[in-house]
Amino acid sequence: MPLVRIDMHQHLADKRAAISAAVHRGLVASLGMPEDDLFQIFRLHEPGDLVYSTTFPDAERSDIVFVQILLARLYDGAQKQAMGAAVVRELVAEGLKADDVLIACTENDGPDWFAPSRDFGREALSR
Image: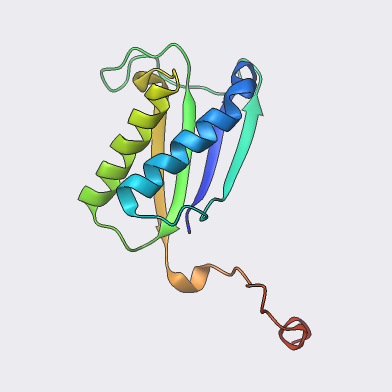
């Protein structure tokens, strides 16, 4: 159950749905995430709010879309790199420039997540 945070400039606001779908398609295709495992937070920023290098590392950025993916510690380095590549491919298909995307993946363990299901009882809430 990844939690995805996407920070981007306000002028991309109309592309939120397309960016959301692209990131999710990349996760589903590369990590085998269930199609309904979708949790994302978008934050829109004014010019000057996002500070970034236009050239590091060997890039030609004209804008930036930060994608932070928090997921359970289940994947090795190769799987996470494949995930990043899949997400970028999907974002490029939606019109973003590959150099304008920066993905940071962080991990935690199973007990760090809590998502009660529809069967979560009232007695558990009163404890």
